[in-house]
Length: 187
Image 1 (cartoon, rainbow, N blue to C red):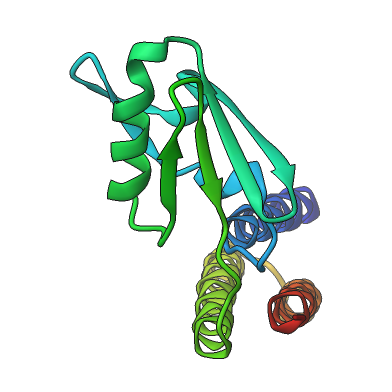
Image 2 (cartoon, one colour):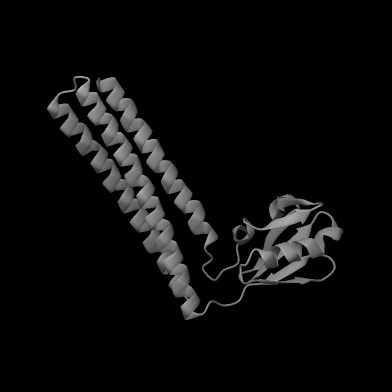
């Protein structure tokens, strides 16, 4: 029985780590006033009839803290890339200079910063729900082991261990969200 519980704890921890990693990737996408190539990760470009990620059509770089550049591998794709960026609804205005796309990142207004903080908190809440879901799955499995002969003490200890793991990951989520909020609100 203890082998099953150890496997359960490992699986639960791995699932919670996965939720935390997903949160980290989602938070990177929320811009904090600085230009980063990851801002364009969700941009899809119509590449000969197929929606293709921008990163597969050209190089995305930062020129400075307020400017992104997209250097396409095919010059004929410039207008499609500009369309893709506009259609991604990021609030960015791409400029085509005939060689590359230049995107100036506007300074965030106070209202926009507050909206971004709300978005970050919503992502944090989704992550917490996912972590709690992993806790519920683990506790349900422990209860099923109780029916198979696991003692009351082992059930209680296992549930306590799952709760400790949950609390640890919830604290990590809160810390990530607090850091992102500070980053967004910094002018």
